Image (cartoon, rainbow, N blue to C red; front, side, top):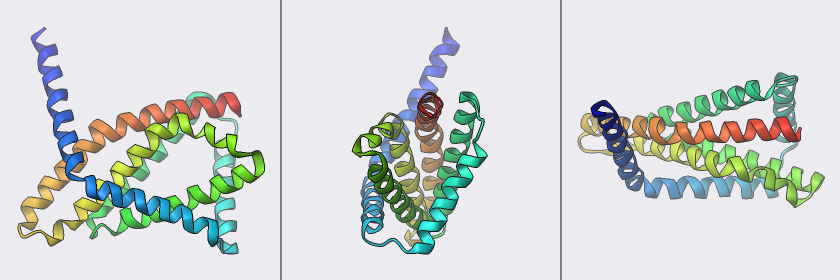
Length: 198
């Protein structure tokens, strides 16, 4: 019983610290959301042929790679990709926050591009398929990029070493206690929907 109470206290403490740091990152969260929407907006008015071809090849490669996957394989594949991409986008924010900014713009562009083509091909209702896992996946991605951006701006702090350690600790805590659970739920929903709906 005591061990359970200690475990509950451990998780409660780190969730509390995670949410405190998320509040501290609120400005960066808003910036990342803006960049995602800006990237999506640009995709509607500017679609260079070489980029369109690159996106099509990327989607085809994923379809080929996951051909014949069962539901469990699909869940693991999605989770692995999302965890890896989110972690690297966050960690490499250390380079003055440039990687999260670039990632937000490119992800927004690709999402806008794919959403437009999907709606044109199958109607607006096709976007409803994104909603069940999107409500978990998008916040996780936004958080990863926002804390990565904040992490990289430690260079402009007066106490660089101390601030780097504090921001890195906050970023890793959010990744472990908030981002990972959200991405696990998103992967289970998305993998199951892909398997069931085809």
